[in-house]
Amino acid sequence: MNKRNRIINWIGFSLSLPENRQSEMFYFDKSQNLFFSIHIVDYFMLDENLEIDESATSSYNKKTENEIVSWIKQIEREDKLIISVPQKGLINDSLKRIEAEKFLEGLSVDIDKTQIWEVEEKISVNIDLTKERTNNENKKWWEIWK
Image (cartoon, rainbow, N blue to C red):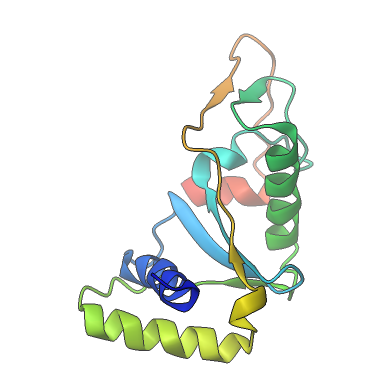
């Protein structure tokens, strides 16, 4: 499969997810020409200041952890360089491809310089509940569960 088709399929996967599904969200980072996704459990690694919470551990290596934290911070401050890939609940393959092509064209990127971020196969985030952790009601990311 060529690179363009791989990217179209990746965007198509996001387009196939139901609207507002939050277990995994898909994005494009314009500054890095990179498609990436954030899992909802990634947010559990963070404290109220969007820093790694001392009561949380993950199976990510440090570089990956730092990338995720950086992207989450950019998403939360609505950085214009981070573009959300839509989730529309599309099931028709032809329609997914058409919508994915439109989305990709709208980004105006050079496919040869564009990548899809690959995360480690097995990931886990553990929270030590014996350590004190404050769930501040004002924590923006926490609104997902309200």
